[in-house]
Image (cartoon, rainbow, N blue to C red):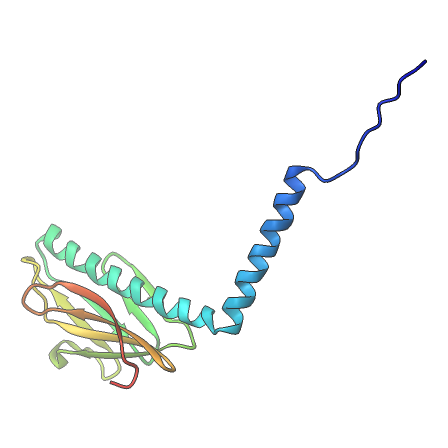
Length: 154
């Protein structure tokens, strides 16, 4: 008598995990798209990037012992930091700059100057998206860079 071993067909663990992962990714993307999440992610990401580059500019001023400039052009939607660092601001976002007028090289451009002792000329960069906003404040006395949520109507 020969015994035949019956093989049970089914799904492997890897196949099940792959399907569950695809469903999860699809759900997250659908939820983000329906709630305007991609623009809000861009708002937060851009604000964090600007804050990080302002902190970098301050650190460069302290480490080199020479004043360093962070320049932002809200109309051209660009920013520049020391050592060739630069970036653009995504299209759905609006940008406002408040700072010392004496440092502006043109009417559309704003600048914050950091000194060797860490102090700065101070300023504020607001990144806006419809009803949401984030602002990056630079204290003039200490050069401290603070990122916070803001009211878009302020």
